[in-house]
Amino acid sequence: MLWVDDVVAGYHEGIDVLRGVTVRIEARRVTAVIGPNGAGKSTLLRVVFGLLVPRRGRVVFDGRDVQDLPPDTRKRLGIGYVPQGMSTFPHMTVEETLRVGGWTIRHDRLRLRDRIARVYDLFPSLAQLRRVRAGVLSGGQLRMLSIAKELVVMPSLLLVDEPTAGLAPRIADDVYRLLQRARELGIAVILVDQNITEAVALADHVWVVSMGRVQRAGPRESVAADLRSLVQEALIGTGG
Amino acid sequence: MDATLLTQYALAGLVIGAIYCLMAVGITFIYSVMRMINWAMGEFYMIGGYAQYLLITDWLGPERWYVALPLAIAGVGVLGMVVQRVLLRPMFAGGIERLDEYATIVTISLTVLFRNLAVVIFGPYQFSPRDYAPPVQLGPLPVNGSRFVAFLGAVALLGLFAWVVRRTWFGLAIRSVAQNRVGALSAGINLSRIDMLAFGIGVALAGAAGALLAPVFLVYPQSGALSTVKGFEIIVIGGLGSLTGSIVGGLLLGLVESLGSVLISPAFRDVYGFGLLVLILALRPTGLWGERAREA
Image 1 (cartoon, each protein chain N blue to C red):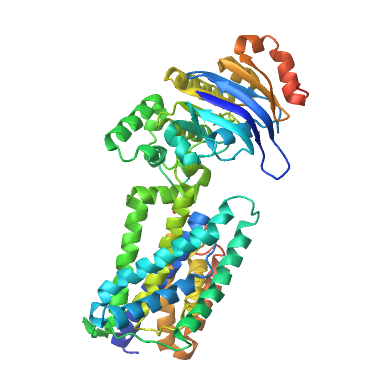
Image 2 (image 1 turned 90 degrees about the horizontal axis):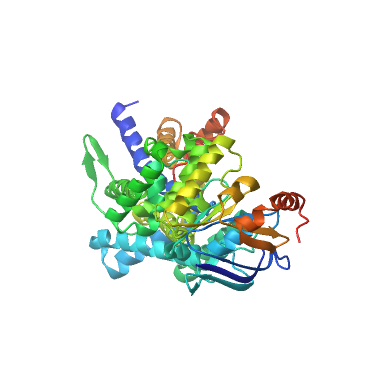
């Protein structure tokens, strides 16, 4: 469903963060992207969502070239993005935040209402907070809300950047369970995460990224065997 | 002091304060959404005044001022959107590192450009459209008809603005962009379109103030200079980024100016506002509503 072909991208002239990345993912799979800091994991997600236009290469989503489309168009095509940090709105209630999440389907009132109701089914804890402003929620609740907000439109591909950074382990587990649930709902997930063990445990596929390239890619089983050395590589960045 | 006279001045202060609110809300709104200060706000006020003058003296006739008002306001809004699209959008397209400096230079240049264009096109003269309405009796108080219309217009526009921001989908999108641009982007909101519309609406509020006040104050190339200063006074009094602060600050400034004029001396009218400003900064450096409540 997603094919990233020989993508070169970076933020500053002459400095390439991604140096020829080619990957492919299938529908309904969780892919964990692991690698050291600065490897280009988040940048890869930004290229797929359209926040960064690649200097070279193609991004094909559901058979369509999307590398030149702006983020709002990609969102309509079914790509969701949960950025690093907070993507919620401090002065908005939980309900309002979910309505913003349903922006692209706002003209279909019944569908929107139905989707928000389903999101509350998925996140019963948010249902109790619907009139509460996001500014007073805890870090874990905000992270849940960030993900819930993207699930309102039921994307077919969800890009998730560091969803558990700074969370207590027990709350991080809730986030992983939720991503698992997203897969069961038929959503493909690309997960960038520092918690390598947990991310790999959840994933169907694993990509090891370092120095702007995908050094290894394969099903979890093939990678899990030498996870130990991968972790080492990821931490000290000697991959490849 | 005669209580009737005092009430009359207080009322006059509130009338002018409502107009100040339009300016201040416009500045705050643009700041909240785009995180930039539009220094050319007064020039959009000035253009609103000229547009209204031309419409009612040359094209529609003075008796159809109420048709001219929405046209003048919309015209300023469209001009604002063009300015945003052509001159300000590049600042979000990447490649420019210091956004606020870029915005400052562009909008200050615009003040120079618009003022001089006004001199070139209309000459350095002062124009005064005819009054919108005959004097109105508010209880025991006679009120200048144009001021009364301007007050009602300002209140109606502020009400409409509040309704749009709080109750509509567009308002929800605007608030989301103001509170978290990345969060709005990930929801599929087209940021550049929202920025353009927000800038258009913000300057249209200034244009509205200019058009509404055209018969009260004169229309001339520098007419916007003082209103920009007043707008910023209010922002600092009310607290940067707070719409409530802008409205309270605007009314307060109008009141202080008017009561200062009658109780002390009308010669220092513009000084009273600064006195209030200094006082509030000394007591509450963030302004009345500063940072505590950024709503939009």
